[in-house]
Image (cartoon, helix red, strand yellow):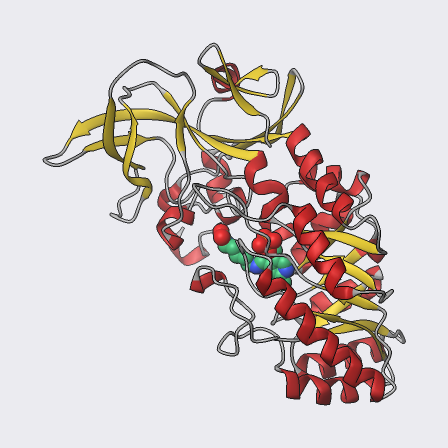
Length: 418
Ligand code: LLP
């Protein structure tokens, strides 16, 4: 359920006509629905209300300050993978003790920043990282709370670029190594073993891979208990999928039921790191048609947004529905919706049936709230687009469009070239 809908053939976000925003803000822009964000976050929360838990929204999927602030006010924590995301989270008011730090390559300065901030825990992915964290904590005379990330070797049945829990992936430690790593962690004076973590992939549309992973983790926890290592937090990562096209992923409540049933009467605190399932369908990218042209076999619709604004179609061949902001009665055509960038890979949609459109029409790339703006770049010196949030009948620019000056703000020409 989301709040992008048609009224008299015109697309609205909650109670605001999208064409109205385009008129004031210009195009392209990302548009988020406050009610949808809130509803999706609370649906995830509710799925686990019967168990001690913390929902740490995955900042990498959408790290706008307004979005992070909303989840913070709803009591959420944050899953971060860099010092930059830690900074964003703290600025948005996420309490440090609700922040988990994941990622295979945490730098020393990032570890120090996280220790000084007092985060909930580090999800550690290698022996060397463990040693680094122990050293940093010793220097600061602190004890670093950690979980080890186990790679449970289950197939999430998703796109190979976004599956992370297979042996061949770079993430986590496999089940033999992880036991050794726990022993090592337990022996570190400046490390406090708190939990186990795992994340098996993204855009997962079935519950079975999650349940398989959880079962394997339960076996691990039993082994650890036998060694006298007590686990109080179980971080199951993110990964729940959404509907982009025809997919029918489980609702968070179904996912919740399956996880809680598998867990039985264990009283560990559950941590989740959902990203896409919360923000994916709460955002769209609004773009304008610049030109249309007829090819031999198909039409091209050339729009003012490109792969630098939304890279998912180019990078993963991902599907985003393309909808007209104002519906018309025109015939359906088969077209490639492409951007102005000088690459054949620059497209938002390929061979797509859409209503015939013309220069000046507005189109929406749907389901663009996750891994949309955050993956955008300045390629072809295109200023990054604005982000807008709607709440009921009001909209607010939550990130202004970059200017040409912004493009060169950090650059400097050495004296010998002046
Ligand atoms: N936790 C960890 C450790 C992760 O690596 C990820 C995503 C998440 C949580 C959040 O996963 P989610 O709930 O959003 O599935 N750029 C790709 C997705 C990459 C996901 C990377 N890790 C895309 O556009 O599909």
